[in-house]
Image 1 (spheres, rainbow, N blue to C red):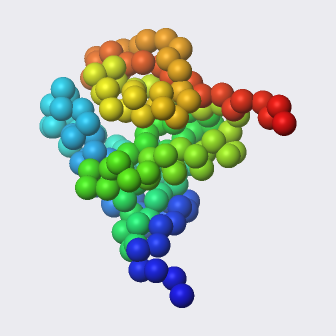
Image 2: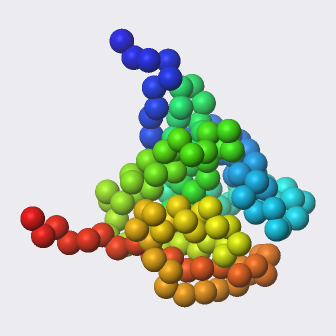
Length: 153
């Protein structure tokens, strides 16, 4: 018998777009308080109509509700977001681990002022490889990369 609070990870479906967009918006505004909330709101339709449908996306479902997602194109992670009320429960690590199983290298950009995310990626084996400026916000970013370690055993 399965539990009502069972967690699953699966590919995103078209009917998931609204919930995934909602998570992206809420988590973006929480994590990036240094960017005006109106900017994030103005990007929601683009995220739902253009970016998410073009990326390879996976969702984490806690119980009967999507509570996190990851979007990747080739080896570049465009976004990893967890609903604010579900953060710090291992969901982000689970999503990232799923990608690590099928990739040898993963890259991403993270805002330098988002210390929680930078720390999360460091703890998950990512290293800073450079710096950039976000073309949309002008905020300073770190370029980060993870490489699968060769199996020496």
